[in-house]
Image (cartoon, rainbow, N blue to C red; front, side, top):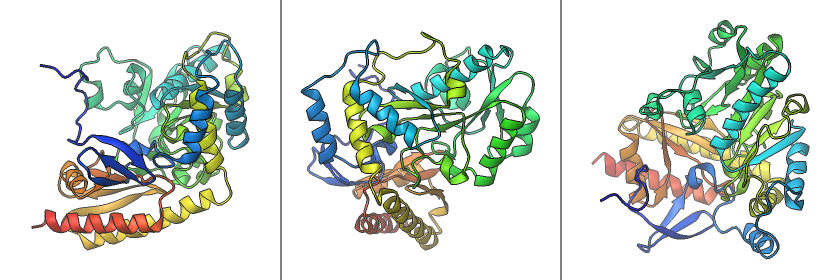
Length: 390
């Protein structure tokens, strides 16, 4: 008999009922060090008191009233995101997939409104991941996500990630823009070089097409900058984000320049729950912490420590690990044996990580991680490796 929750997830046999800071507590009485952050979502860890207080305060005032009206918290969050990014305006939604779906719509709508309806194709990358809606699985292009969902949504032209010459050759009179992840997280924690991102921006300008970034996973301080595009010192035309923005509350956003957003007409996009008052309150509380003095410095410091630690682990266990890659607090180790087996072994020893493509284990701790937690995680990895080699 099918379970009451549709069985589309491969779940570990653990049930969590509470969390605090860097740790999750299971109904089996065990404590787990969380270096997965709910897949980069719990940016400030679990049960952060500032977020809890914001949620409780807002719950006593207003839960939801729809986007037919103005709300204080929504306008406050939009103003803060605009102030601390390239954007002139923001659209709120509920998830990363919804944000990227909106990005795709906006890219097409912009070109239609400026008199180029034939520009309706978007250049995307091999091994990308942009979500699980019909359009975003088509943009990602991975067979494991596309199988069974034909006809596949049209309008995407794929090139090799990092190959600037192939990208340039792919542009034609039907190209609306380029969609790229600064780091392919699901694809195996593969960072684009800063030079590559800079060249993409120049090419987009040269051909008068749009540059859109998928910062669902890399945004909201995960790499040590508020958004990862800042490392390359470029300005995209639009950007989709989610995950860590809500600190654990479901929330997505599209950040857009005025030039592009001005072509979206009344009724051309919408979201019933987007900008929900509870989500806005929690996100504003999250930004209170993220935008505080020293927060990004801390993320960068811990990112360097994690980098050095994972480098050492790769060298210490050459029979299990091949290499290490990533930026900030989004890093991964490529395994020689099954990453699923390594992940299960780490969980059994009390460390939560996340698998990714290219046989990689992702390390994405909450951004509040301290040196002592990285040491604790290192000890668990070392113990696990010794057990795997027995």
